[in-house]
Length: 44
Image: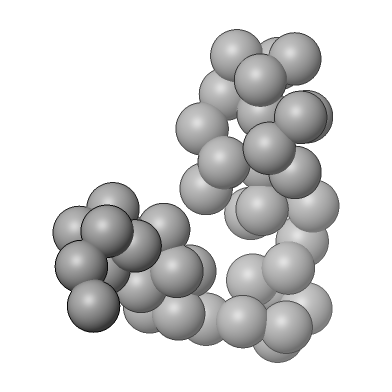
């Protein structure tokens, strides 16, 4: 997804949503926001 986002000059969040991962129930928007939270990625 990161490669696709880079190629399309889009945000990773947009690519995940466009691929249907939120709509089909694989994850919620809250889970997506938590997974993409930069502060959570860089702090223990």
